[in-house]
Image 1: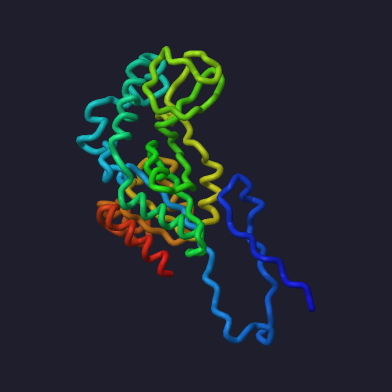
Image 2 (image 1 turned 180 degrees about the vertical axis):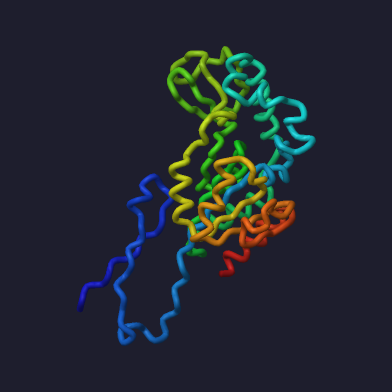
Length: 276
């Protein structure tokens, strides 16, 4: 009996993406193919970009709404490296308040639907993989059950030591005199990306975008780069969908849009994906 061809390797969003390309199976002649063998469903790779809109429906304030955080705080006072150097106490208090607000909210139906899609893949109920790239610094995706999440703007529930580089989990208040739990020096700052800083995990994100079959943008204005350029990057090889309270500012940017609350539209879209 001739040896069987190699089994295709599943796509992975891990750090060694270059080594996880699928190996095509040996082509069989029509005479070799089972007559009643069901067609295999294609393996899907989905990248989902989420923004403030998905967390707004859980009750979190957003920065860019007319009545949002920027109506009470100036960007240059709380969200830049210079602001932290000038008044670290003000910046720490700002993020302490955001942390306290986060504990008062829960994941909503949109977060839960995305987690359901990932769970279906792990359970073998859907032939695909989903990577959530979020601009949000909250942990609502993780609390909903999603594991494959990349925080390109950092995480509210972590701090970063500017002395030793450690990024420990953090749930309490943090003040300028708070010591690092690793090196014990008072050099902690929020582990978030401020204006003027480079977003995190961009190599992993770019690699996933280059290989995805679907790109879905949920609850983001699409005005902040580099995320604003993601849809253009994938347009030649992936289906694109925008889910938002309003239609895209550029109607031709996405092939399809679903206008409405994320808590209604995202579960509907996930049902479509799982139905094939």
